[in-house]
Every structure is written in structure tokens, then in C-alpha cells.
Figure 1 (tube, one colour):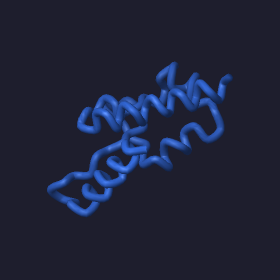
Figure 2 (cartoon, one colour):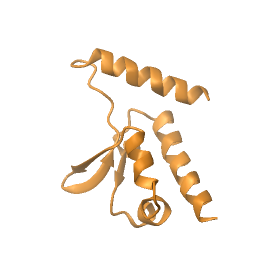
Figure 3 (cartoon, rainbow, N blue to C red):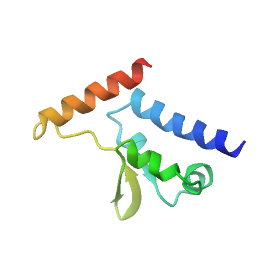
Length: 93
């Protein structure tokens, strides 16, 4: 049951990012958010899945977060193209 909640929470995060990649709020997870810690953060591998999916550890307004950032198209066209292609492949399946 606990693993099912963690997997459902991760699925929801990735579905939201896929549906709304331009929205920063869906690509930011507060590391100390009670619901995140309860559903994902307390489990072995929970945070590692986010890191493997491209999230980085950072902060927004001094709030520690896991961040998924879209590459800057003006500075890194190849990186953006790879990111976009991967995002498109994920939404197809």
C-alpha cells in the first residue's frame, strides 16, 4: 500500500510536468513539504528517482527544492532539443 502511494505520487508529478512543462510550479518540489516527505521522500529510492529523471537539488527564494528545469533554448539548443524529444517520447507511452 505504501509503495502504491509513492508510485502514484511520482506518476502524478511526471504527468503534471508532461502536461504543463512551461509551468515552473509543477517542476518544483519543496524538499521539506510534509506531503512530499510522507509520500515519496521518506522511502528508499524516492529521491533517487527524481534525480535520475533530471531533477536537481536547489532552492527558490531560499526554500530547498528539487527542480526540473527546461534547458535554455537560446544558450543550449541541442540540450533543449534532447529535452523536448525525451519529453515527447514520454508523453506518447
